[in-house]
Image 1 (tube, rainbow, N blue to C red):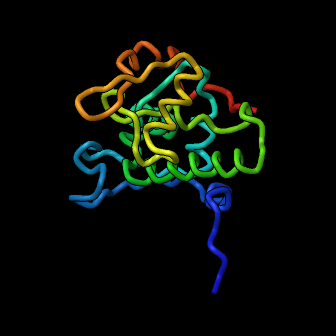
Image 2 (cartoon, one colour):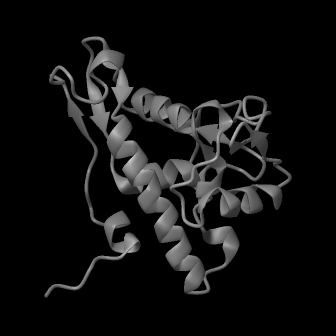
Length: 169
């Protein structure tokens, strides 16, 4: 039986972003694109954009998708693949953390929130781990109904275009 690929292997798969010009009706992103094209990014590209986030900055997954769409000059970035690639990036960062890589060299996946500033239970360690990592940077997550959220997420968003930032080292 073949060895299961690690998240780092998936992140470094060499997959390239591609543009879908004819989105099938009913497909993710179809209504949002409103007849325009959609980019299906790559794990490495999503990882590279998230790495540009500075301590204390947060973005939503929708902000990340909008930056990808602007970068490629299309109407929308695929919601499903972007979320999957972001999760791959988070898991790869945690694999690197487990291998004793310095924290400042890890992809700061915890800085990407769900719509409305909600924390993501699908990230490694769930919302408790994400809240812990955000708190270490001075970002407070508080209860909102039954979930944790960052209430000042809009004020903490990068002021410059995320898609135009130089790649992080």
